Length: 118
Image (tube, rainbow, N blue to C red; front, top):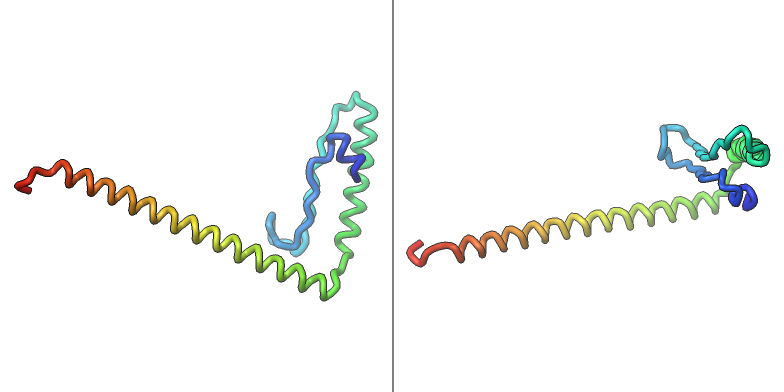
């Protein structure tokens, strides 16, 4: 696999059961660059990569995780979801604080411009 990546043709392999790209229960995404037809070496590497991708699709489709591995994955996913939710909450809090600072700054500027009679 490392030799294929070194060729520069293989850009990405991603296997997921998270329904990220569509509603399918299992999805494999492989990004392979199609070389110029005149480059025989690169065409051969491409053919090997493509064959490997098809082989991996067959293997991934029949793969069954053990219950322990499934639990580990679920735990990790829950942890990642919690981290993302916390980051989102922190970002929201920061935006609220920034909006409050801007509002307070505008209020101070408005008060400075007011005459003593007002």
